[in-house]
Image 1 (cartoon, rainbow, N blue to C red):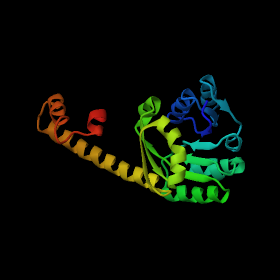
Image 2 (cartoon, rainbow, N blue to C red; image 1 turned 30 degrees about the vertical axis):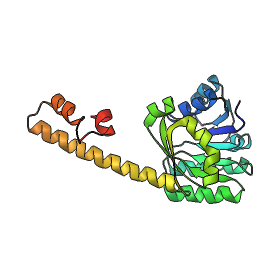
Image 3 (tube, one colour; image 1 turned 120 degrees about the horizontal axis):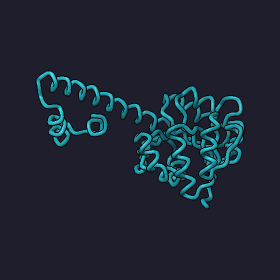
Image 4 (cartoon, rainbow, N blue to C red; image 1 turned 90 degrees about the horizontal axis):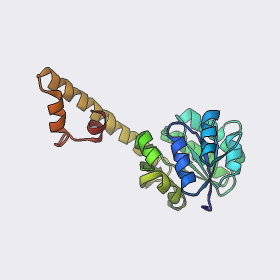
Length: 222
């Protein structure tokens, strides 16, 4: 059994397989989610559960949040029965959601005022990456805190990058998303041009996927 006790708040399509990977790696994991079906699924693979995010925090050394957006992060950390209410001094909160960097900094200030630590660690790689434990994880936070969180993050990701202070992970994710959107837009225009020109679309795809137009978006979504 690993020494650090993990709390996991948010058991959606990404969070549930991530929590499972931590249990399978030997961590004691306590979970909280409003969806009782996903909580029961987590209990089936060996996690324990709590009735609030605050209770999960009380039982944990490291608390991971994986929720949809900034509003949800603020609610589970600073809201009623939130993580702040149960957080122990010296704990680490790892937010792996994709949110506004300023919200991450706000949560970091609140958590640090309680004598605990915060890192932002948004991910890329989708559900498949979460299930396989090969996510790319983009981390912002104090270097010492990053080193403490790293063994946990290595279970969840195949590539973990420390990008700088708090907020750097979230900002890197935004920039990464911008690249992805631009790539998708260009890919769509190229396929429209190819179709209007009468090209065989399968032949076009097979040709460009091995050339300069090759990309993750093309290979995955093309």
